[in-house]
Image (cartoon, rainbow, N blue to C red; front, side, top):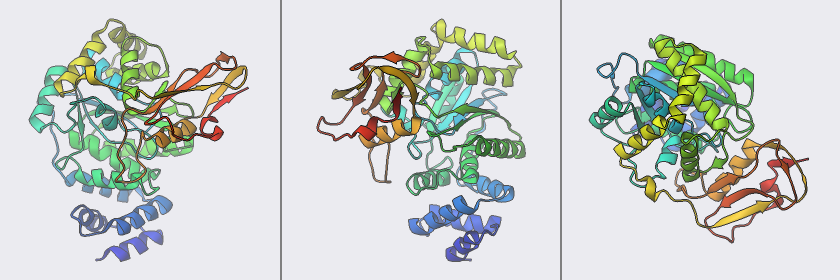
Length: 409
């Protein structure tokens, strides 16, 4: 068996066996197969796809690349949520504390940015001191005590997905449905979640651009969950516009805190919907009642308290959270109405500022990003501030096209 034959078989649209997938992916993890060959295989998979049998096999190979957690000693039901990637999507930082305030136990393994979308781990690493690679014992204790803990992928937990995820991020292979499904579900299953809600983003700022693609992914995620006896539900949500006013790591943490302080926004609505669905999945609570309870958790301050406890328990110091002190105000050139704010355009500008990676060796600047000052439907006047750009230096060059993602009519 050799890697070149496997690449050619997938290039020719043939199905790969469990042993072929195991050979290719495990040997890449051990360093025996170079980046360029794995990149070629990932591209062949992205172009030609994989069937469900292949996808289940790859999920299993990912899971078996490290250890798995059994959280049944903490609670009979441990929840998790996942977003397939969105612009301004700091939902986890709101949902986790809401769930904890509602008495649920959430164990969350999150990833770094993928493509132009920011990852939850990147966001929390903007908090000085925050530990994303806690030991197994520390992770279990935090779920038990605080109701919510967050972990990055480590050398022990799905290490294969960690290296493939990073390679997909910089090789144009992020949108493959089989690779997305295997990546998501291997992490959820390895971490021990029993009830999983997956928010599938659809639109210009998401990995998936059509509802049809999202519905296919939804079915695959549920089928993989069934194979592992996990309860999986999905929601499809729009990602043609940014989910919140903030795009960039530290800025998004600050915006999540604003939402936990009661600020209403699409981020608030999405977080409430997800937390309510998780409560319904576990306890059978009426959906309307569950949403009322989720909103009450925010308005009472209970969710904010849980957030602060979560950050402190993982070593973070919110008093030291900083954004860039170099701010450029972008102003409207005419009177009008905000017709749309394109998520993809916003993500590209944030990436240009340094908020996400373009290559494996890039370093993220946690303090840069965009703070939108308007929303769709707002009436504005010439010279009103449309957005604030938090930049590394004032001499960065911008062009009219950089700001065209806000359409004024």
